[in-house]
Image: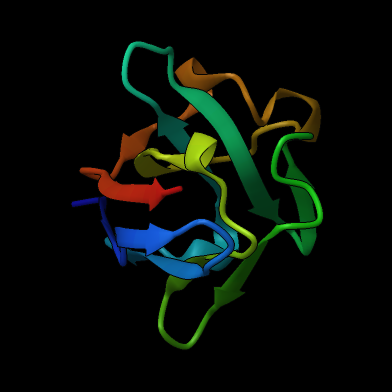
Length: 124
């Protein structure tokens, strides 16, 4: 069974850092694309970052502040979030996609499995 477990959220002050983890089971993250998405209160869920086949993509709003990485030995994908802003406050989700064209990484219907989400709250 394919499962994703997101963790690492919490309360952090503006300018601080958080590392989110997405632990996968039932498949190998090296063989799939893994995306991070977020949903802020009252807003639609949006793509944050994506990693696949050594390539990484970021939403403009998080570029140069967030870094996505993968540890194949732990079958886990990470999202290092630096210089956090109050507008980064959201529930963060990870999701997996098989053979997803890079140009479609932000399209949520293309993802097969989703983690349960982890809350990140950035105080000003």
